[in-house]
Amino acid sequence: MDLRSLLPRLLPGVSLPLGIVLVILFFLPWVEMTCAGTPVGEASGWELTVGEMSMSGNMPEQMRAQQDSGDDEGPDGRPWFILGLIVPAILLLVGALGAAGRLPSKTAGTGLVVLGILGIIVAALAFSVDYADEMTKDDEQQPQTQPADAFAQQMGQQMAQQMAQISTETTGTVAVSLVLYVVVALLGVGCLLLPMLLPPAAPDPVAAPGHPPAGPPSSPPPPEA
Image 1 (cartoon, rainbow, N blue to C red):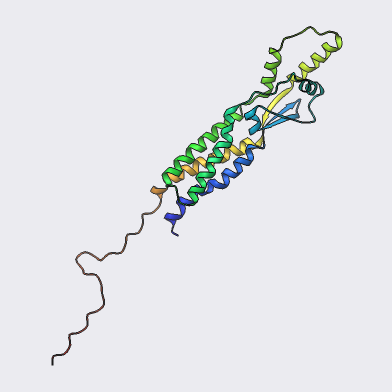
Image 2 (image 1 turned 135 degrees about the vertical axis):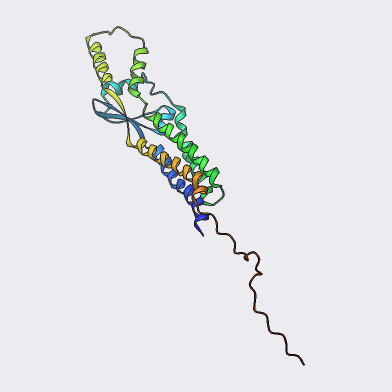
């Protein structure tokens, strides 16, 4: 198999293992919520999509009591993050078809560029997630009632102080996903440029113009009787 037939399969085929890795990364923690620097919860790409969070054992008692009582409705769902699963799934298909030689370089390249850009957008949106801001807004929207006693008032003040210390940080999973999506887009660009970069196919050997094709030497005429 020569270079002209190998590279159109090799470049899209590289996206096949990338798609597998990106699917795995989608179910790993994307964001982490901390309280005074201590991790208290995390959310994967799937949990960001459906509006869930896995809370850790370090969650303050006041926050845990609020969650157990049902006052905490959880973070808002972000349905657009489902692209973090759809894009790698399509990437697997493109990689499989490309490796089998069933996609032209132009089609595979265009698909990889589009998928890479969509993935970059999804990863960039993950950097803007702020669960702490959502929890603060939800707390402000709840009706404020007068505490029944000094103990309840003190508990409310402690809860407010802990809410002020909550922050949301993006994990390294998102950064790795972002880099891989950039690689996907670059693979697409390579597929689009491939026809211009490959050397032209060698022409079939033909006889030079004006000269008959070379053949077996003619036998001498038979001797005259």
